[in-house]
Length: 139
Image (cartoon, rainbow, N blue to C red; front, side, top):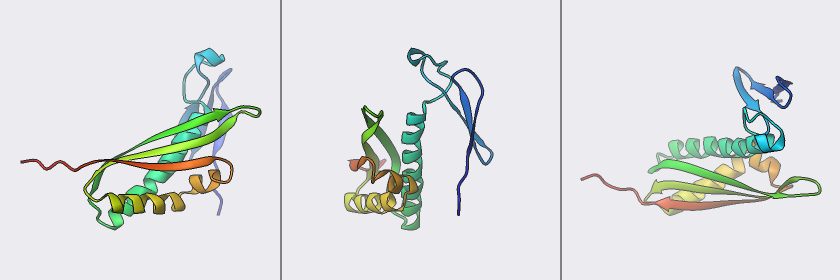
């Protein structure tokens, strides 16, 4: 099986990426001589990791009818140079739940199922960290 996307130039610093019927603009910020019309490639990489992981996590939560809501991710990449790259990426998982153990197990399972994290792990120090907010009952 293959997954294929296309990217083509649309301006001096801007390109358009397409997968199936979905499009994203790729550009550089103004301070890097871009026109800031879209995220940089590295930002797309972090979003791709977050999106891949999130889709696996939400599927795992749903399949188990787990009481986990309001899932949010903060994906942070640490840059290194020579060559320019991410040396470390941390994914902070925040959710409302009363069962932290279940959330932590589903995070591990979702990380293992994620194509992007499996691809990045040999090249980057990749860490998933769980943060929680207790579920609030409405009276």
